[in-house]
Image (cartoon, rainbow, N blue to C red; front, side):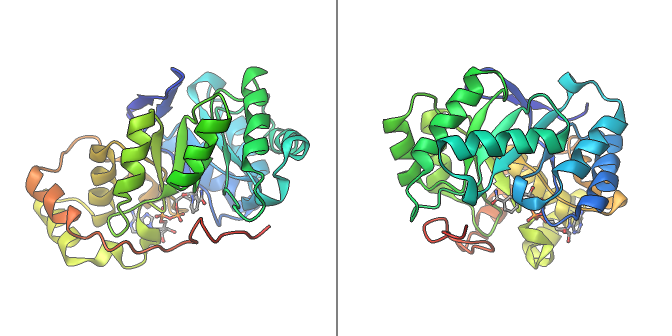
Length: 276
Ligand code: NAD
């Protein structure tokens, strides 16, 4: 594939760019993931709560691509926190995907009000030990949640998947991750396509490189070292979003984009997201 890999802290290699399927209904997921695999994506990011693990699995099976060339991530939903519930939820996810292992399993949110993410993570360690997932990690963990995991469990998370885009650059989390060897994976890397792609600075850099705003934003992530998982169901955009490995932003471009940080969240604040 044309996508470079990064090496996670346990030696497993993960494509630096993958395909996200949030808000894609199950019956459309099969088609969208099929388009992505056809365009050269080899990493797919789904979650139990997205309701499209089955469609994702059907697209994987239909692709005929060797399993070892693929990198499949899914996530444990908030209502399934707890040691035993996690093991059951993992089995259900694998069943829907039609796979015998995943590559990365993430705790979707810390749900601090439940205070169950430590025991949940201990079940993740068991799944890792049993070879049912090649790597384990978290999503939406703030530095305080990571500190607690690092103090009370044995396996350093391979990944923390957090909201990250030019208007929410997450410098503190990125520094904490780097200090512990945790890869930073950016969700809503394109700012959900809402507004960010029309920001004049992004448009100007796009004109300079004769690229689209989405390609500029993805290139910014890649040069920062983030893993990215842009989502689209439009085949031309799916292709556009992976066509970002033959140009580079220069220091001037990176400086201009650095100035766009407003600390603006599009999604929930992990400290307060306690929905089950
Ligand atoms: P995104 O930033 O990837 O934006 C997707 C939207 O941007 C599309 O729906 C489309 O409207 C637009 N778009 C995409 N490509 C474009 C292009 N080339 N040109 C113009 N517009 C384009 O948003 P997202 O789906 O929220 O995030 C990506 C993935 O991150 C999700 O699918 C999911 O896998 C993951 N995610 C995880 C969490 C979490 O809590 N862990 C939360 C949100 C998303």
